[in-house]
Image 1 (cartoon, helix red, strand yellow):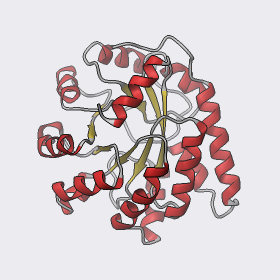
Image 2: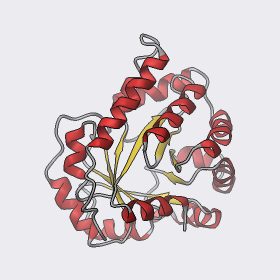
Image 3: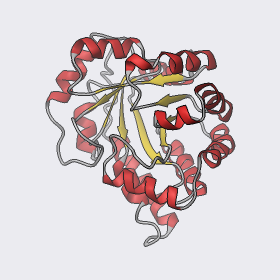
Image 4: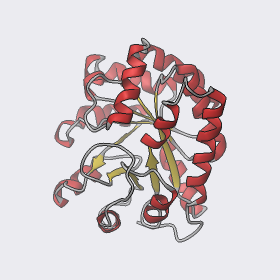
Length: 273
């Protein structure tokens, strides 16, 4: 059983859901990223998703795009990120998955990238621009290395294709709550609940919902039908307030925000596949 599968198995036994914050590696620097990762693990988050900065992100909204730009402008590169992971991930009590463009994976060669991801302690990869029809080489390499390859289903994914994606996914299935880009939203479409409920009948994988989730009320809406919620822009926006705010103040605000999301998680009635 993979590290991610173990987490979701434990959560189901304990009748809890996962909170999975997203952070950009190296925004504003890698030392700060490592501190926030540790803080979020201490607050009770179940997993972390760390974005590898890329100059041409596909589905990221302006907040996360800006964080990628800041990290790249500061000179953050893949080798630096892997080094930080190697130093930080062994100290964490929760698994970490990397969100990475396939252009980066391809440029560094699939086998080499996966080996480095494994060696530094990553639990899985999310590669949003890799079509399911072309994922087999990366999927097989991840499976051989003990990594999960998490794939995405969107509101516009045809049902037959969604089933195929679920069959090629390990760890958990990432359901994108809205058609469009990442970013904080006031409301989520009511169809999210219906779509996730349908997906649950098609797969035994845990289902985590991301994109647009930024408030406790969103968590209360999604958690009854999902195994976890992924929150990105709302965390990244708080980090963007550096250097106008002291870093310790920002970390405390991030801790408080995480607590508010965790407090909105229902304590029982965990969905079962």
